[in-house]
Structure formats: structure tokens, C-alpha cells
Length: 54
Ligand SMILES: [Zn+2]
Image 1 (tube, rainbow, N blue to C red):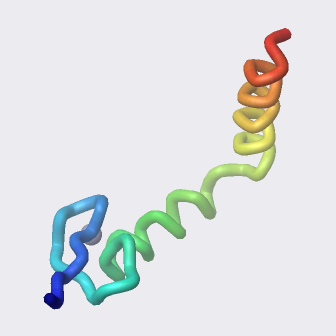
Image 2: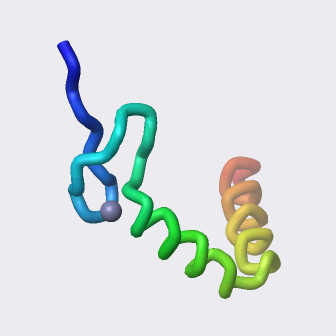
């Protein structure tokens, strides 16, 4: 039974094997592109700290 995936962002029907539609993927890339890497490093640091419990 064939079932189309839906974009996790806007709910558009997209080809199987994809998570988001082309439009949202582009937007997400743009969004991530504007964020400095250090922003994600900070988040990872916080997550690690929580996992370590200190
Ligand atoms: Zn979308």
C-alpha cells in the first residue's frame, strides 16, 4: 500500500523518503545558515551537562 509522506513543517504531501517539502527544506537551510555554529554548540553543551547531571 503506497502512502505519501507529509511535510513535518506545513503538512504538504511529499515524495516517500522525505521529511519536508522542498520549500520548507530550503527555508530550514536558510534559517540554519543564519545561526552561528556556536549556537548549536551551546545547546549540545547544555544537553551534555544535563545528561551528566551536573
Ligand atoms: Zn513544507
